[in-house]
Image 1 (cartoon, helix red, strand yellow):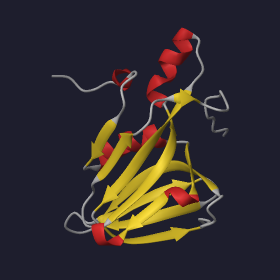
Image 2: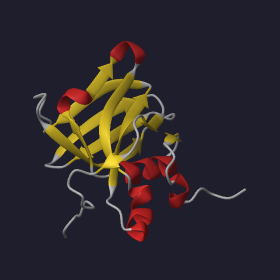
Image 3: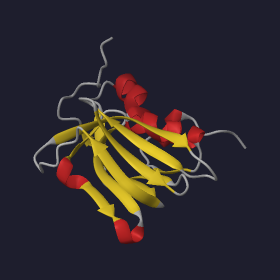
Length: 157
């Protein structure tokens, strides 16, 4: 048995789970630079679930795209956090037409497995999710499509 490699995702739809900080780092890497309209955020208090429908850059396919000389791709994915007790946001517009960009996902552990999942957004925005336990899912829900910009996201220093 061996660890999965980034390239193993290839053309397959992703469905990944994160139950610890190491798992969450993988999801954070795969969702970096995902974009979504503010209207695609969903907080289901009764089900204790917070979800985002994101347009994720396919980082796992970038090397293959470059090797084959084809344009880079995005895919729609659902990022879902379970066991959420409370949701807070800072600097996040609730205007349905606002497009948000996800930069990273992190977890600050509390006592007895509780903690805070933080979704850091471009423009100093953040969403904090108080959770009973770390339980995050990333699942692709569409086929990949050509990235409208045809460019790989960059982060100038």
